[in-house]
Amino acid sequence: MNVPDNIEAHKPPKVIISCMDRRLNEYLDGYKGPHDAVLRNAGANVKGLKSSIEKLMAEGYKVFEIAAHTDCGAMKYAKAALEGSIIPSDAEKEFLISQFNGKDPASLERINASVQFDEFKRMLDNKGISNVMLTSRTIDLDKIHFDRSDNQPHFLSIIMGTSPVRYLQLQLDMSAGSASSYFIQAERIAEVLPDIGIAVGALHLSDVRLIESKPVNKESLREAEKILASESIFTSGKAALTVVTLNGRKLHS
Image 1: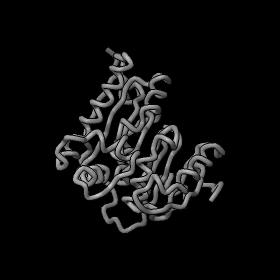
Image 2: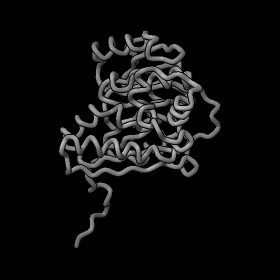
Image 3: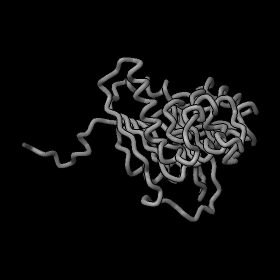
Image 4: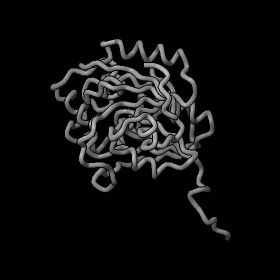
């Protein structure tokens, strides 16, 4: 049997569903393959990404991996909502919090990967799809490398599309200096409303950047501006929107 020199290069492309947390950026840069697709939101939340997942399956992706992580802000937010110490928006309740109703609030971080796995499996079963390989895991932040000083400013980047961009390079391209970005990534901004709400309202990220890999689609821009101008999706906080391309050229602010 001839074994290829680079086994990884011969693996089928996969879809990685992970969290928007900035501490995962360097890890995901080194982990994902050149043809892998990436989806990111608050908590690697499958329920909020179903249309993107269905589109990727239609494009031929058969391998999906859910990668949640320890010390997850989305799980802390869900815990606070379940305990009644915060009042989430309707979108946050529907697409994130509701999955954990009846669960022990203290266990969310531990069970999140399996909750998302079960949600994905239900979606496959409901559609009669049996040829998809699905795995889930929890990334231990204590075992991966990232900048632990946490003294740099933070902002939010919303990537329209699932291409495996280089997150650390993208931060430099956006002239972010030492700033560190949380990344949300999906096919349409309408899919990630709860996640934007959590980023702005709970994490207090007031600098929001809409990233396009091609000249900005005016419809996407209008949708983004409308969403960020609407206080109804936020529990608190406001944000300013800038639109950039992947090479860093500012198109709108």
